Length: 353
Image (tube, rainbow, N blue to C red):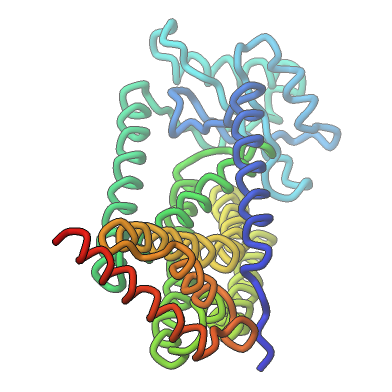
């Protein structure tokens, strides 16, 4: 089996992710902001059907232009002529739901005819409920992250747990960038999709980490970077097949469903792609970086404690990071390093005496 050198481009892929996430979030927040649904912003959401062959979302939006903060979106097949109308509640109108609902129907009936407008659904969310929902969403997502950190720490080691959390934060941030850039509505379906993707991405990451742990026992003579590349290569076919199969099912839901279910499927499609990418190009490189940083700290501590030459530790780090077949330290070189360490320690003891 030919091992693919995934970690060689780890800095490029991580740098691309950081640039996209920071740039996307900054652009979204500075420009239009997120398209918050009625679940997270107090207001009225109506679904209406208009029996006029010439009606479009633009004409409905123009008809309701006198209403502040109105949003109009076409839903379902075009021949059904159904539209979602959302209006934010600024807290200035009493009985906002009934007053604004009557006003919307009245304006549309004045243009398309009294009998041509049918109100199919009416949902109102008050300010207190939307605030509670936002707070609970943040709390639940944070709790899920903490529990995942504890589980992976218990199941593997701290380095694996931190790498998993970094990957999940990357996935959530990347999804928020795409949602904000394309102005996809943020609703309870979006939060459900994000939580689902957290579990999906974590599963992919754990599969690769489990293979890395097994290969650490089998490939004792190989460097850790080689072990990571071999583990990803061995798990790649399984990861791709699982992701493609999931995408086929979710794409079918997106094509044939409507409304909230279609929005949920769209977010899942984004999340599956991002989760697969991060499991390969984010989780394992972060683990490799953590491992190398830990070895450098240990080397420095040993050098300070025993007077070990830094060059000897650098030699060991090079052997750990590189494939054994390419940069293996010779037996004579290892013997020379050991003798040098012994001599330095003996000299240090004599000075102390």
